[in-house]
Length: 445
Image: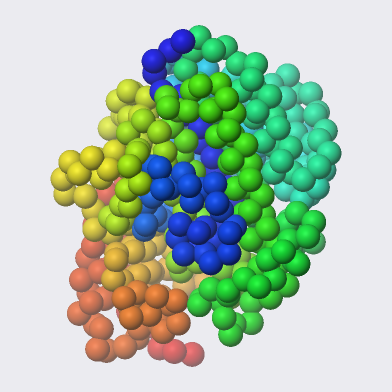
């Protein structure tokens, strides 16, 4: 049996941080994650680096910004020559398994959303494979199909999150026990189902969770959360149940102590309150995500209050396995924060927004500052960056945590905007985009 730690990456889709009890959710939606946080490490202020499904996934697979890989919108394939975490772990002797949603194979002229993803488009995940490029296209909340490593269609019956977990558990029970493993479980829950445009929780979710407290950013808004929020929490509750199943199997096999379980999400959901859909916005409802780790290097029930980013995940996983992250990776190992050895840790997180706009921004503990290219300049998803941005949002998170009051045009905060603009320009430059011009927001229409 290997002494190298095993890795289980438990990845949800479109899950807000405040769905979890360890982040303040009043209802018992996530008892297993809460228990894991009490044993491991919880990152209080974790944010995505791209609030869009495919781009966020490209960042996790490569450790690079989405603009660097070219995957800055959905329906853009990961470059065939991209070196991913799968390649690094395979070289280190790990047994690889990928289960669930991929979302990095299809592009114009190559549509794999409902058919098998070719081996060369799996980003190096060449061990066990049971996946769909776009899982919401091959399944609903109940029932659907994925494809295996030999491109065979495999149908499943039952609630989707349970079935995805069944495949993962089957692999855990039949894997080569002489090698360390890296199991990447990529759920679609709690993402809305595209065709009916609603959230599909397990049967009974609406009744079970109808007494939920409405988050402050949603209360009183015209979004579509009233009919959806209980089912959304139902999806999260199902994920938590399946997290419990995975951890129970690790215990049963006697390998829990040597397995790092890392749970997070690609982005959150604002329920059509900030734009015409659920994400692609700078607000915390989209940016802020749960992030909890438990296992070697992540123990003791610690809460890390420094800002963490999804871009930090790839070097963190590699460091956990004893693999030195390459200099091209943009994030930093979170172990430095856990151990208290971090030096010059960033006091802001940088994010890119694309597909709905060309947007950039930073979040600090106190401020949210975001810029974008005005609508007429946005050229139908073809342009990844710009030389000129206009200020769009400024929020005082200390006094306005629900981001109800945009201060971007308030003259009283001109010096704050100027300071944040300089930080943002530096961050954009460090991402390889050059130093842009940032102009003041246009007058209120």
